[in-house]
Image 1: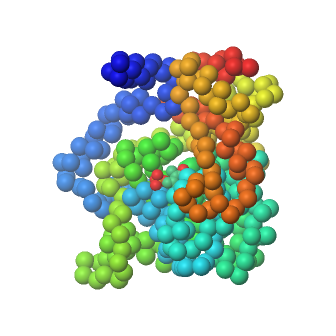
Image 2: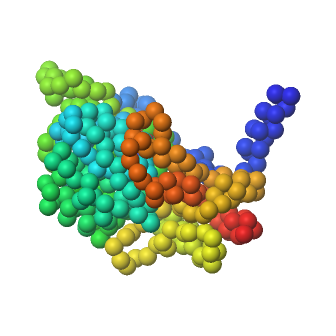
Length: 380
Ligand SMILES: *Cc1c(COP(=O)(O)O)cnc(C)c1O
């Protein structure tokens, strides 16, 4: 029985008409260039901190318009190093959100500091109106998380940060290419932290991340902390970590870098198609359609719809061969083992019970998008 059940399950896996993400399809489209980049590294023996990493850092800084970019092992480490080097210590407080991937809050906790979690707004990002009431003498920083490819309201956040002398560490892991008021995500604060996890808009073939900054001290220290605390071959200035951006991953990312503007345009096009096909369904809340005017330039890392019957819709779509994702079913302050239960975040809890991400990536065909639209409609 066991065997039969397993084989049915694995068979079902392959019957997805629309996968939530399709790595092999993207690879096949880029195969020639990717293979050349990877085999080039193998031929030259370029594995650790070689030219591809330097080129990647140049690409990132020039795109974002920051002075520096420092490649690290992952987005989690980008957040942690930025928090650590910002000078966060025991008992300091950092204002951030619970509706995020755990790494944002973990970065604060690993510095011994205390995360102060505030609620999100209708766009599922930090509600800046709750920041000032949460500031105490111990508050040192604000960590906005630009979720799903849409930025937080940085006009309000930067204004409050400047008035209160707080550092801003942006979790821009889901916001490569997103803009607020014409300015790139990750270029506003002390540090902009990106993840190049494979499923991210600018994804590698494994873990990767980068810190963007205009701060010379952060640039210098991050390079030391990521490399075992070594300032150069002889001098060790702290007990650092080994968190280098893999040179092979950098070579892959440099190939993808040129494609990003087109990929982001395609993401926005698909979002527009979803909005056009679904906007008349009263029971479904959609993200704002992408526009060229206004404060927000959204890049749709995820296309997240909200509805009361989320679990039933999820099941319906999965049965139709459409793979979906829920981020996140249990908000961080409801995770029993994290010790964050004291926060009262009704909007975050409501959002967690309603969110469902539909497939959205550049390689989706219009037929697939239309099929998803048709299946969502057939649920109602
Ligand atoms: C992906 C992600 C991270 C962590 O990035 P990794 O590269 O996986 O370590 C942090 N914050 C958010 C919001 C993310 O989506």
